[in-house]
Amino acid sequence: MKVFMLGWEFPPHISGGLGTACFGMTKGLDEIGVEVTFVLPTSLPVAAPSESHVKIRTAANLSTATPAETGTEKIFEHVSIHQVPAVLQAYGRPGDFEKTLQKLMEMAKGGKTDLPSFALKELVEGHEPAHAEELQSRETFTIGAGANYYRGDLMSQVSRYARLAVRLAKKDRFDVIHAHDWMTYPAGMAVKAATGKPLVVHVHSTEFDRSGLNVNQEIYNIERAGLHGADRIVCVSHLTRSLVIRHYGVAQEKIRVVYNAVDMPLTDELAYKPIRQSEKLVLFLGRVTMQKGPEYFLRAAKKVVEKYPNVRFVIAGSGDMMTSCIREVADLQLGRYVTFTGFLRGADVDRVFEMADLYVMPSVSEPFGIAPLEALSHNVPVIISKQSGVSEVLTHALKVDFWDIDEMANKILAVLRHPPLQKTLSQHGGIELRKFSWRDSAAKLNDIYKEIVKSA
Image 1 (cartoon, rainbow, N blue to C red):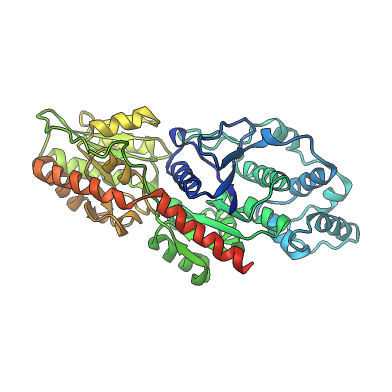
Image 2: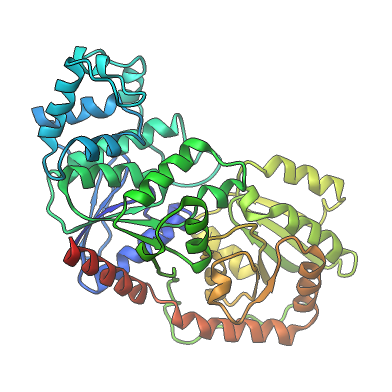
Protein backbone atom coordinates (compact mmCIF):
# COMPACT_ATOMS: atom_id res chain seq x y z
CA MET A 1 0.00 0.00 0.00
CA LYS A 2 1.30 3.47 -0.90
CA VAL A 3 -0.32 6.66 0.37
CA PHE A 4 -0.14 10.20 -1.02
CA MET A 5 -0.45 12.15 2.24
CA LEU A 6 -1.50 15.82 2.30
CA GLY A 7 -0.81 17.74 5.50
CA TRP A 8 -0.28 21.35 6.52
CA GLU A 9 2.07 20.47 9.40
CA PHE A 10 4.44 17.63 10.10
CA PRO A 11 7.51 17.95 12.35
CA PRO A 12 6.21 17.65 15.92
CA HIS A 13 8.91 19.82 17.46
CA ILE A 14 7.67 22.91 15.61
CA SER A 15 3.99 22.11 15.16
CA GLY A 16 0.88 21.97 17.27
CA GLY A 17 -1.55 19.11 17.81
CA LEU A 18 -2.29 18.67 14.11
CA GLY A 19 1.40 18.32 13.27
CA THR A 20 1.90 15.88 16.13
CA ALA A 21 -1.02 13.76 14.91
CA CYS A 22 0.20 13.77 11.29
CA PHE A 23 3.69 12.80 12.38
CA GLY A 24 2.43 10.08 14.74
CA MET A 25 0.10 8.53 12.17
CA THR A 26 2.82 8.60 9.51
CA LYS A 27 5.34 7.01 11.85
CA GLY A 28 2.81 4.32 12.73
CA LEU A 29 2.13 3.63 9.04
CA ASP A 30 5.85 3.30 8.44
CA GLU A 31 6.16 0.76 11.25
CA ILE A 32 3.59 -1.50 9.59
CA GLY A 33 5.22 -1.17 6.17
CA VAL A 34 2.96 1.36 4.45
CA GLU A 35 4.78 3.69 2.06
CA VAL A 36 3.96 7.38 2.57
CA THR A 37 4.71 10.39 0.39
CA PHE A 38 3.98 13.38 2.64
CA VAL A 39 3.39 16.68 0.82
CA LEU A 40 4.03 19.89 2.75
CA PRO A 41 3.02 23.36 1.43
CA THR A 42 6.47 24.90 1.79
CA SER A 43 8.89 25.72 -1.01
CA LEU A 44 11.83 25.01 1.29
CA PRO A 45 13.51 21.60 1.43
CA VAL A 46 12.43 19.58 4.47
CA ALA A 47 14.52 16.72 5.78
CA ALA A 48 12.71 13.38 5.77
CA PRO A 49 12.48 11.49 9.06
CA SER A 50 14.56 8.39 9.55
CA GLU A 51 11.62 6.10 8.77
CA SER A 52 12.50 4.14 5.65
CA HIS A 53 9.04 4.19 4.05
CA VAL A 54 8.44 7.95 4.34
CA LYS A 55 9.28 10.59 1.75
CA ILE A 56 8.76 14.32 2.33
CA ARG A 57 7.83 16.33 -0.75
CA THR A 58 7.66 20.12 -1.14
CA ALA A 59 7.89 22.58 -4.02
CA ALA A 60 11.65 22.03 -3.87
CA ASN A 61 11.03 18.57 -5.36
CA LEU A 62 9.53 19.99 -8.57
CA SER A 63 11.62 20.20 -11.71
CA THR A 64 10.91 22.61 -14.54
CA ALA A 65 7.21 22.50 -15.32
CA THR A 66 6.08 20.67 -18.42
CA PRO A 67 3.54 22.34 -20.75
CA ALA A 68 0.82 20.15 -19.23
CA GLU A 69 1.75 21.28 -15.73
CA THR A 70 1.79 24.89 -16.86
CA GLY A 71 -1.78 24.34 -18.01
CA THR A 72 -2.61 23.02 -14.59
CA GLU A 73 -1.14 26.16 -13.03
CA LYS A 74 -3.30 28.30 -15.32
CA ILE A 75 -6.50 26.53 -14.42
CA PHE A 76 -5.90 26.89 -10.71
CA GLU A 77 -4.81 30.54 -10.86
CA HIS A 78 -8.28 31.57 -11.99
CA VAL A 79 -10.59 29.39 -9.94
CA SER A 80 -11.46 29.81 -6.29
CA ILE A 81 -10.09 26.98 -4.21
CA HIS A 82 -13.37 25.24 -3.39
CA GLN A 83 -14.54 25.31 -7.03
CA VAL A 84 -11.56 23.56 -8.63
CA PRO A 85 -12.34 19.96 -7.63
CA ALA A 86 -16.04 20.33 -8.40
CA VAL A 87 -15.21 21.73 -11.83
CA LEU A 88 -12.83 18.91 -12.63
CA GLN A 89 -15.16 16.21 -11.35
CA ALA A 90 -18.15 17.60 -13.22
CA TYR A 91 -16.45 18.15 -16.59
CA GLY A 92 -13.80 15.47 -16.85
CA ARG A 93 -13.28 11.83 -16.07
CA PRO A 94 -10.92 10.94 -13.21
CA GLY A 95 -7.47 10.21 -14.58
CA ASP A 96 -8.13 12.21 -17.75
CA PHE A 97 -6.90 15.54 -16.44
CA GLU A 98 -5.43 17.04 -19.63
CA LYS A 99 -8.64 16.41 -21.60
CA THR A 100 -10.55 18.06 -18.79
CA LEU A 101 -8.41 21.18 -19.08
CA GLN A 102 -8.89 21.25 -22.83
CA LYS A 103 -12.65 20.86 -22.45
CA LEU A 104 -12.78 23.77 -20.04
CA MET A 105 -10.87 25.92 -22.54
CA GLU A 106 -13.27 24.98 -25.33
CA MET A 107 -16.26 25.75 -23.15
CA ALA A 108 -14.85 29.18 -22.41
CA LYS A 109 -14.26 29.92 -26.07
CA GLY A 110 -17.81 28.82 -26.85
CA GLY A 111 -19.21 31.32 -24.36
CA LYS A 112 -20.55 28.71 -21.97
CA THR A 113 -20.20 30.45 -18.62
CA ASP A 114 -22.30 28.22 -16.42
CA LEU A 115 -19.46 27.64 -13.94
CA PRO A 116 -20.12 29.95 -10.96
CA SER A 117 -17.60 32.74 -10.28
CA PHE A 118 -15.26 31.24 -12.83
CA ALA A 119 -13.00 33.72 -14.66
CA LEU A 120 -13.24 31.93 -18.01
CA LYS A 121 -12.48 34.97 -20.10
CA GLU A 122 -9.25 35.60 -18.20
CA LEU A 123 -8.39 31.92 -18.49
CA VAL A 124 -8.75 31.90 -22.30
CA GLU A 125 -7.05 35.24 -22.93
CA GLY A 126 -4.21 34.40 -20.57
CA HIS A 127 -4.54 37.48 -18.39
CA GLU A 128 -2.75 37.14 -15.09
CA PRO A 129 -4.67 38.04 -11.94
CA ALA A 130 -3.58 41.22 -10.20
CA HIS A 131 -1.99 39.33 -7.32
CA ALA A 132 -0.04 36.81 -9.43
CA GLU A 133 3.35 38.49 -8.98
CA GLU A 134 2.86 38.69 -5.23
CA LEU A 135 1.88 35.02 -5.11
CA GLN A 136 4.96 33.98 -7.05
CA SER A 137 7.31 35.78 -4.66
CA ARG A 138 5.71 34.66 -1.39
CA GLU A 139 6.72 31.56 0.53
CA THR A 140 3.81 29.18 0.55
CA PHE A 141 3.46 29.09 4.32
CA THR A 142 5.37 29.20 7.56
CA ILE A 143 5.76 25.92 9.42
CA GLY A 144 4.95 26.18 13.09
CA ALA A 145 2.36 27.66 15.37
CA GLY A 146 2.22 30.87 17.32
CA ALA A 147 1.01 34.39 16.65
CA ASN A 148 2.15 34.32 12.99
CA TYR A 149 0.87 30.82 12.32
CA TYR A 150 -0.84 31.80 9.06
CA ARG A 151 0.95 34.58 7.25
CA GLY A 152 -0.47 36.55 4.37
CA ASP A 153 -3.51 35.39 2.41
CA LEU A 154 -4.29 31.92 3.75
CA MET A 155 -6.78 31.13 0.99
CA SER A 156 -4.17 31.88 -1.68
CA GLN A 157 -1.75 29.60 0.14
CA VAL A 158 -4.33 26.81 0.23
CA SER A 159 -4.97 27.28 -3.49
CA ARG A 160 -1.27 27.22 -4.26
CA TYR A 161 -0.89 24.05 -2.20
CA ALA A 162 -3.59 22.41 -4.35
CA ARG A 163 -1.57 23.21 -7.47
CA LEU A 164 1.61 21.90 -5.86
CA ALA A 165 -0.10 18.67 -4.82
CA VAL A 166 -1.42 17.97 -8.34
CA ARG A 167 1.99 18.55 -9.90
CA LEU A 168 3.71 16.28 -7.38
CA ALA A 169 1.00 13.63 -7.72
CA LYS A 170 1.62 13.45 -11.47
CA LYS A 171 5.23 12.48 -10.69
CA ASP A 172 4.33 9.74 -8.20
CA ARG A 173 2.54 6.41 -8.01
CA PHE A 174 0.20 5.65 -5.12
CA ASP A 175 -2.94 3.77 -4.17
CA VAL A 176 -4.85 6.25 -2.03
CA ILE A 177 -4.92 9.96 -1.14
CA HIS A 178 -5.12 11.02 2.52
CA ALA A 179 -5.85 14.68 3.33
CA HIS A 180 -5.59 16.09 6.86
CA ASP A 181 -7.94 18.95 7.84
CA TRP A 182 -9.62 21.60 5.70
CA MET A 183 -6.51 23.37 4.34
CA THR A 184 -5.70 20.22 2.36
CA TYR A 185 -9.21 19.21 1.25
CA PRO A 186 -9.06 21.21 -2.03
CA ALA A 187 -5.70 19.59 -2.79
CA GLY A 188 -7.09 16.17 -1.98
CA MET A 189 -10.10 16.62 -4.24
CA ALA A 190 -7.97 18.04 -7.04
CA VAL A 191 -5.53 15.12 -6.87
CA LYS A 192 -8.47 12.72 -6.86
CA ALA A 193 -9.90 14.40 -9.97
CA ALA A 194 -6.51 14.30 -11.67
CA THR A 195 -5.65 10.68 -10.86
CA GLY A 196 -8.89 8.85 -10.12
CA LYS A 197 -7.45 7.51 -6.85
CA PRO A 198 -9.75 7.19 -3.81
CA LEU A 199 -9.66 9.97 -1.22
CA VAL A 200 -9.65 9.74 2.58
CA VAL A 201 -10.15 12.99 4.49
CA HIS A 202 -9.10 13.16 8.14
CA VAL A 203 -11.12 15.46 10.41
CA HIS A 204 -8.94 16.74 13.25
CA SER A 205 -11.28 19.70 13.89
CA THR A 206 -14.13 21.53 12.19
CA GLU A 207 -15.06 25.17 11.82
CA PHE A 208 -17.70 24.63 14.51
CA ASP A 209 -14.97 23.55 16.93
CA ARG A 210 -12.83 26.57 16.12
CA SER A 211 -15.51 29.26 15.85
CA GLY A 212 -18.65 28.00 17.58
CA LEU A 213 -21.71 29.06 15.63
CA ASN A 214 -19.91 32.08 14.11
CA VAL A 215 -18.43 30.01 11.31
CA ASN A 216 -16.39 31.34 8.42
CA GLN A 217 -18.65 30.49 5.50
CA GLU A 218 -15.81 30.02 3.00
CA ILE A 219 -14.03 27.55 5.28
CA TYR A 220 -17.31 25.75 5.98
CA ASN A 221 -17.91 25.43 2.22
CA ILE A 222 -14.44 23.92 1.76
CA GLU A 223 -15.00 21.48 4.63
CA ARG A 224 -18.40 20.45 3.29
CA ALA A 225 -17.06 19.96 -0.25
CA GLY A 226 -14.16 17.88 1.05
CA LEU A 227 -16.34 15.70 3.26
CA HIS A 228 -18.85 15.03 0.49
CA GLY A 229 -16.10 14.51 -2.09
CA ALA A 230 -14.24 11.94 -0.01
CA ASP A 231 -14.60 8.19 -0.36
CA ARG A 232 -14.02 7.75 3.38
CA ILE A 233 -13.93 10.16 6.31
CA VAL A 234 -11.77 9.54 9.37
CA CYS A 235 -12.84 11.36 12.55
CA VAL A 236 -10.64 11.52 15.65
CA SER A 237 -13.56 10.80 18.00
CA HIS A 238 -17.24 9.88 18.09
CA LEU A 239 -17.87 13.46 19.25
CA THR A 240 -16.45 14.71 15.96
CA ARG A 241 -18.31 12.03 14.01
CA SER A 242 -21.64 13.26 15.44
CA LEU A 243 -20.76 16.86 14.60
CA VAL A 244 -19.83 15.97 11.01
CA ILE A 245 -23.11 14.13 10.48
CA ARG A 246 -25.19 16.87 12.12
CA HIS A 247 -23.64 19.99 10.56
CA TYR A 248 -22.35 18.74 7.20
CA GLY A 249 -25.02 16.24 6.17
CA VAL A 250 -22.55 13.44 5.50
CA ALA A 251 -23.71 9.84 5.13
CA GLN A 252 -22.66 8.11 8.34
CA GLU A 253 -21.66 4.89 6.54
CA LYS A 254 -18.69 6.80 5.02
CA ILE A 255 -17.27 7.70 8.44
CA ARG A 256 -14.76 5.77 10.53
CA VAL A 257 -13.39 6.75 13.96
CA VAL A 258 -9.64 6.40 14.60
CA TYR A 259 -8.35 7.84 17.86
CA ASN A 260 -5.08 9.74 18.14
CA ALA A 261 -2.27 8.45 20.34
CA VAL A 262 0.94 9.59 22.01
CA ASP A 263 4.58 8.57 21.98
CA MET A 264 5.40 6.57 25.09
CA PRO A 265 8.40 7.38 27.29
CA LEU A 266 11.61 5.73 26.15
CA THR A 267 11.93 3.75 29.38
CA ASP A 268 9.49 1.20 30.73
CA GLU A 269 9.68 2.60 34.22
CA LEU A 270 7.79 5.81 34.96
CA ALA A 271 9.78 8.21 37.12
CA TYR A 272 7.38 9.83 39.56
CA LYS A 273 8.16 13.27 40.92
CA PRO A 274 8.50 13.69 44.66
CA ILE A 275 5.89 15.71 46.50
CA ARG A 276 7.14 19.28 46.80
CA GLN A 277 6.36 21.74 49.57
CA SER A 278 6.88 24.75 47.29
CA GLU A 279 4.35 26.56 45.12
CA LYS A 280 2.12 24.25 43.08
CA LEU A 281 1.89 24.77 39.31
CA VAL A 282 -1.35 24.33 37.33
CA LEU A 283 -0.83 24.30 33.56
CA PHE A 284 -2.91 25.34 30.55
CA LEU A 285 -1.06 24.49 27.33
CA GLY A 286 -2.62 25.16 23.95
CA ARG A 287 -3.81 27.87 21.60
CA VAL A 288 -5.27 30.81 23.47
CA THR A 289 -8.50 30.84 21.48
CA MET A 290 -12.22 30.51 22.08
CA GLN A 291 -12.11 26.78 21.29
CA LYS A 292 -9.66 26.05 24.13
CA GLY A 293 -11.59 27.88 26.88
CA PRO A 294 -8.77 29.88 28.54
CA GLU A 295 -11.25 32.28 30.17
CA TYR A 296 -12.86 29.39 32.08
CA PHE A 297 -9.41 28.34 33.27
CA LEU A 298 -8.82 31.84 34.65
CA ARG A 299 -12.23 32.09 36.31
CA ALA A 300 -11.66 28.76 38.02
CA ALA A 301 -8.20 30.00 39.05
CA LYS A 302 -9.81 32.93 40.85
CA LYS A 303 -11.88 30.54 42.97
CA VAL A 304 -8.86 28.34 43.69
CA VAL A 305 -6.56 31.10 44.96
CA GLU A 306 -9.24 32.28 47.38
CA LYS A 307 -8.81 28.95 49.20
CA TYR A 308 -5.30 27.84 48.20
CA PRO A 309 -2.96 30.80 47.58
CA ASN A 310 0.25 28.75 47.28
CA VAL A 311 -0.31 28.10 43.59
CA ARG A 312 0.70 29.47 40.21
CA PHE A 313 -1.38 29.13 37.03
CA VAL A 314 0.63 29.02 33.80
CA ILE A 315 -0.85 29.73 30.37
CA ALA A 316 1.54 28.36 27.74
CA GLY A 317 0.52 29.30 24.23
CA SER A 318 -0.54 32.17 22.02
CA GLY A 319 -3.62 33.13 20.07
CA ASP A 320 -6.25 35.73 19.35
CA MET A 321 -7.58 35.78 22.93
CA MET A 322 -4.25 36.63 24.53
CA THR A 323 -5.06 40.31 25.05
CA SER A 324 -8.50 39.61 26.48
CA CYS A 325 -7.01 36.98 28.83
CA ILE A 326 -4.45 39.48 30.13
CA ARG A 327 -7.29 41.93 30.77
CA GLU A 328 -9.23 39.21 32.56
CA VAL A 329 -6.25 38.51 34.81
CA ALA A 330 -6.16 42.19 35.71
CA ASP A 331 -9.92 42.37 36.31
CA LEU A 332 -9.79 39.26 38.54
CA GLN A 333 -6.72 40.61 40.37
CA LEU A 334 -4.78 37.46 39.57
CA GLY A 335 -1.55 39.15 38.49
CA ARG A 336 0.69 37.46 41.06
CA TYR A 337 -0.84 34.06 40.42
CA VAL A 338 -0.79 33.84 36.61
CA THR A 339 2.17 33.57 34.24
CA PHE A 340 1.92 33.83 30.44
CA THR A 341 4.82 32.06 28.72
CA GLY A 342 3.86 32.63 25.10
CA PHE A 343 4.15 29.86 22.52
CA LEU A 344 6.42 27.00 23.59
CA ARG A 345 8.01 24.28 21.50
CA GLY A 346 10.32 21.31 21.76
CA ALA A 347 12.32 21.06 24.96
CA ASP A 348 10.44 23.99 26.53
CA VAL A 349 7.21 22.00 26.35
CA ASP A 350 8.90 19.07 28.08
CA ARG A 351 10.26 21.38 30.78
CA VAL A 352 6.92 22.99 31.57
CA PHE A 353 5.27 19.56 31.84
CA GLU A 354 8.04 18.44 34.19
CA MET A 355 7.37 21.46 36.41
CA ALA A 356 3.58 21.03 36.44
CA ASP A 357 1.56 19.46 39.24
CA LEU A 358 -1.65 19.42 37.22
CA TYR A 359 -2.71 19.94 33.61
CA VAL A 360 -6.16 21.39 32.82
CA MET A 361 -7.83 21.26 29.39
CA PRO A 362 -11.06 23.33 29.65
CA SER A 363 -11.86 23.15 25.92
CA VAL A 364 -15.24 24.35 24.71
CA SER A 365 -15.04 21.92 21.79
CA GLU A 366 -12.11 19.55 21.40
CA PRO A 367 -12.34 16.91 18.64
CA PHE A 368 -9.72 14.82 20.42
CA GLY A 369 -7.02 16.49 22.52
CA ILE A 370 -3.51 15.07 22.44
CA ALA A 371 -2.15 17.41 25.13
CA PRO A 372 -3.68 15.45 28.07
CA LEU A 373 -1.94 12.32 26.80
CA GLU A 374 1.33 14.25 26.60
CA ALA A 375 0.78 15.46 30.16
CA LEU A 376 0.21 11.91 31.39
CA SER A 377 3.35 10.78 29.56
CA HIS A 378 5.18 13.27 31.81
CA ASN A 379 3.40 11.86 34.89
CA VAL A 380 1.17 14.91 35.28
CA PRO A 381 -2.47 14.28 36.32
CA VAL A 382 -5.11 15.87 34.11
CA ILE A 383 -8.51 17.53 34.31
CA ILE A 384 -10.27 17.47 30.95
CA SER A 385 -13.42 18.91 29.46
CA LYS A 386 -16.31 16.53 28.93
CA GLN A 387 -16.69 18.29 25.58
CA SER A 388 -13.60 16.54 24.20
CA GLY A 389 -12.96 13.40 22.21
CA VAL A 390 -10.24 12.18 24.56
CA SER A 391 -12.80 12.03 27.38
CA GLU A 392 -14.42 9.12 25.50
CA VAL A 393 -11.38 6.92 26.01
CA LEU A 394 -9.42 8.30 28.97
CA THR A 395 -10.61 6.77 32.24
CA HIS A 396 -8.07 7.95 34.81
CA ALA A 397 -8.72 11.67 34.46
CA LEU A 398 -10.99 14.10 36.24
CA LYS A 399 -13.71 15.40 33.90
CA VAL A 400 -15.76 18.60 34.02
CA ASP A 401 -18.09 20.59 31.81
CA PHE A 402 -16.02 23.49 30.45
CA TRP A 403 -18.53 26.05 31.71
CA ASP A 404 -18.72 24.68 35.27
CA ILE A 405 -15.95 26.76 36.85
CA ASP A 406 -17.07 25.84 40.38
CA GLU A 407 -16.58 22.12 39.71
CA MET A 408 -13.34 22.82 37.84
CA ALA A 409 -12.03 24.78 40.83
CA ASN A 410 -13.12 22.05 43.26
CA LYS A 411 -11.26 19.38 41.30
CA ILE A 412 -8.13 21.53 40.98
CA LEU A 413 -8.21 22.03 44.76
CA ALA A 414 -8.69 18.30 45.35
CA VAL A 415 -5.55 17.47 43.38
CA LEU A 416 -3.47 20.25 44.96
CA ARG A 417 -4.57 19.45 48.52
CA HIS A 418 -4.35 15.66 48.36
CA PRO A 419 -0.98 14.33 47.16
CA PRO A 420 -2.20 10.70 47.18
CA LEU A 421 -4.91 11.63 44.65
CA GLN A 422 -2.34 13.39 42.49
CA LYS A 423 -0.05 10.35 42.60
CA THR A 424 -2.87 7.88 41.88
CA LEU A 425 -4.08 9.85 38.86
CA SER A 426 -0.52 10.09 37.54
CA GLN A 427 0.27 6.41 38.05
CA HIS A 428 -2.94 4.97 36.63
CA GLY A 429 -3.04 7.55 33.83
CA GLY A 430 0.49 6.61 32.83
CA ILE A 431 -0.41 2.93 32.74
CA GLU A 432 -3.54 3.73 30.71
CA LEU A 433 -1.42 5.46 28.07
CA ARG A 434 -0.22 2.10 26.86
CA LYS A 435 -3.50 1.54 25.04
CA PHE A 436 -2.82 4.65 22.90
CA SER A 437 -0.50 3.44 20.16
CA TRP A 438 0.18 5.22 16.85
CA ARG A 439 0.94 1.80 15.39
CA ASP A 440 -2.55 0.55 16.30
CA SER A 441 -4.16 3.71 14.93
CA ALA A 442 -2.12 3.34 11.73
CA ALA A 443 -3.27 -0.27 11.38
CA LYS A 444 -6.89 0.92 11.48
CA LEU A 445 -6.07 3.50 8.81
CA ASN A 446 -4.47 0.82 6.66
CA ASP A 447 -7.66 -1.27 6.91
CA ILE A 448 -9.62 1.76 5.68
CA TYR A 449 -7.19 2.20 2.75
CA LYS A 450 -7.55 -1.46 1.78
CA GLU A 451 -11.33 -1.18 2.01
CA ILE A 452 -11.65 1.74 -0.39
CA VAL A 453 -8.93 0.52 -2.80
CA LYS A 454 -10.72 -2.81 -3.05
CA SER A 455 -14.06 -1.13 -3.75
CA ALA A 456 -12.65 1.46 -6.20
